[in-house]
Length: 245
Image (cartoon, rainbow, N blue to C red; front, top):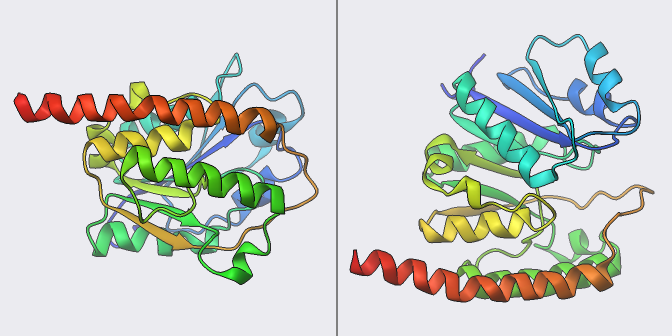
């Protein structure tokens, strides 16, 4: 069953998601053609659960070493390209990114000629109140810097990983330059800015459970700021190089 005559690939990077991954896959609608789950060297029963799921659309990539969410996502997109997908959607495996929102991410790419769609949990006060305060503050800081480094002043939730991308857009960006770890979302926006990709933000709720994040914000935010600032001269050089070529 094609969605508006397009083949859709859903990419799910996972690391230790034994409590959620089976339910996440069960909720995926029929119009998704390919489900690609990348197990990034989980140390729990995630991979065992995946192998026991009876789902003919499911493709599993197993990393022998932990490579990071960014590398997992890119590997999923590359397999989706091999399978013949027209659009790649990425969600997390923890159940916080609901499959019922998929049409809202797909329609702008198909009907409105956007290149990339991205979730936004910051669009109104009620949605923002669902986010823990420390995450809200960290997100605002990193989003503000991302606006400067990319020129995407319309992006208001830079750290959101619920995304959709056209195959043609993925082919244009330098996916080998995308960061493997937690700076992946920001490096993606940076690479998209270099090709002047059109981005649409999609309003969504912030859903948080009792999980503890492996990211320590007091270390993560300063390192992210330095990384983002390093992108500014790179963007200027890239744009000037293209002008004179």
